Amino acid sequence: MGVTGLWDLLGGGEELELTDCSGETWAVDLTAWMVHAHAASFKAKGVSGEYVMMITVLHRALGLMKCGIRPVFVMDGQFAPAIKEDTLQHRSLKMKDCTKENPTDRSSMSHANIKCQRLLESLGLPVIASMGEAEKTCAYLNQKGIVDACLSDDSDAFLYGAKTIYRRFNLDQKTAECYRMCDIESSLNLQRSDLVVLGLLSGCDYSKGVEGIGAKKAYNLICSMKENQQAGQEDVLSRIVNWRSNEELEKMVEKQRLLMELKKPAHCSICRHQGDKQHHLSSGCSICGTKLLCLPEPRRDCSCLYHQLVSEVTPYKLELDARRRALKNADFPDKKLMEEFLNEDSELGHDFCVQLSLPDWERLAEALGQHFNMNHEQMMKKMIPVLAHMHLHDTLPYTNTSPKQILKSCIRKRVPCYQIHWQRFDFDKWSPVPSPQVDLQLTPKAADSKADPYIIDVSRTVFSKRYPEMVTLFDSTPVKRKRGRIPFTPSCREQKEESTGAKKKLIFNEGESVN
Image (cartoon, rainbow, N blue to C red; front, top):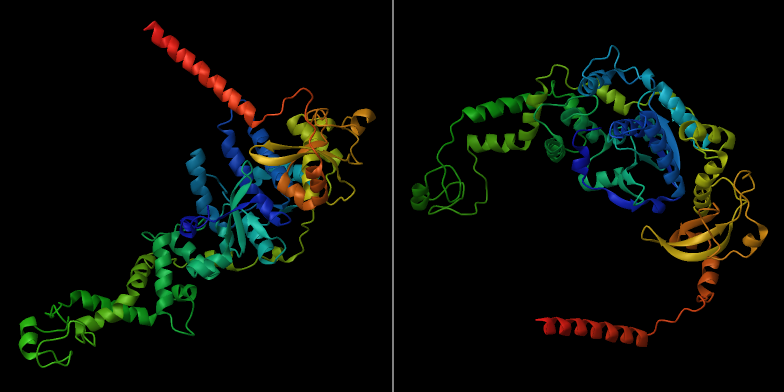
């Protein structure tokens, strides 16, 4: 989705750890999540599409929250832009083999939107309903500095004005690819208006583009036009808009036609000036300024009509070819496409609330019970680790909590962690309360994270940043060895190796005796 071939043109983004983005606020294209989950539900057997959608949204939302990211979810509006009608009709034919009477009407998704919105809002996360495309609202929030980035696989967000886009985020590895508009400007010399040109030429969600022009060819064209551009002249987008009425290009077309009809006269193979090589060797070359021979590296280019036309037409060759292809379409350039990307909608002017809040526990319990058959105790078991991680990242809008004790260090999914016993949240009325004796004398042996939801594994790096004193104290405390355990010393290793070698030697000798 987005501009055809733009992601390939940009290359791989900067891979970042999600925890490195701790404290950032991201605008998330919620509709894209729902569509991806709906597509995945066809492969899932024995579960409904609604269940797959809801569990996907819940799992991803909690994953972002645990990494210290504040997600702000944005949904598509009820109606897609009219300019997208042909694209949506084509998708309907491809997926369902049927046409829709009004393909821009998204009211069929309203039921799913409401369920996702209720679930996310019960988690304390803001949800915004866009009037049009979700990525347009995401880009607006990012452009105005209301959020730090957009989480979307749709490259159209850059054309709408987004500054930073994260995509391909992986909750298992806790990574995402980061693309920044400032990097695109510096490395590819592409401005926002240039990206709109890419959408016009190579195609996007609103246009098929120009036949025979892909993203790479369109990019080379933009670079060529910028090289030919003189100071004070119009930008690339404005020049393309005026292709039909550009008198300079019409003259270039005539020169190009004349060049194709003109037969190239004989030129010297040494100096590449007009004339015969033998004549130059005996009488010299007037352009080289010699009376005998000629120069292999001439001071001036050939001034014949053929080379004069070549020097004038060559810099505009890519533009003339693209112009010829584009103007075959009477509607090029599509002004509605440019207006969609470059003009702000009136509804984007009001204030948006992007602040997180504590979950509404009763609403959350109702939603989790309805969709996942969870009770209050199971709800808290799922939410306590999320809230603890949010506290460590300083994104939890609740400060009356803290870790009580580091129980032990461990490895979880190849990540060095601490097992932490956490202070009970005062709003938790549903988790089982351990006996005071066990709670006061808690040890790694007595700790059971399956039984006690307040025993949580946390990345050492994350915990050390927030509570360095506790880590220092834990590291300085001597480890008590288990009773009856024999310390493993180098002498033990030598004895083990000797016994192993002797056993192997015995087996080998026995084999020899058998033969």
